[in-house]
Length: 123
Image 1 (spheres, rainbow, N blue to C red):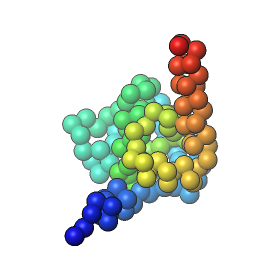
Image 2 (cartoon, rainbow, N blue to C red; image 1 turned 135 degrees about the vertical axis):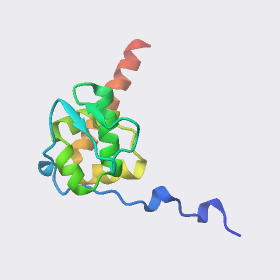
Image 3 (cartoon, rainbow, N blue to C red; image 1 turned 90 degrees about the vertical axis):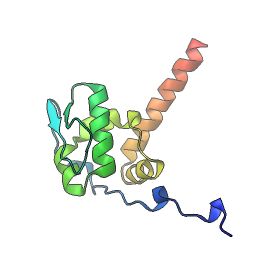
Image 4 (cartoon, rainbow, N blue to C red; image 1 turned 180 degrees about the vertical axis):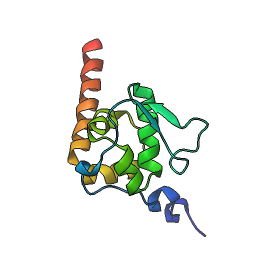
């Protein structure tokens, strides 16, 4: 009989594309970003990069679902660093990106530290 511990879950084996360098990313830094259906199949495909919520939604989709060619064309390295702590990526996906790019892990940790500091000051 199989136990839960014996099972392999989709999240553990799903492959995520990760570019070899943040310098490979040449996406726009502002304006409207139109995502292809292969990356985002929701009712809305246009995202305003100047609005943080839109930026986070678009980057979540690109990182989760985009192929390397999509990521290179759609992601901007400066915006990626800025929005990284706000993304809601699967744990394995975020781990893979942070293993390749220490600057993303550093940014997430800096953001978490700021949040903790604010909470301690408020209390």
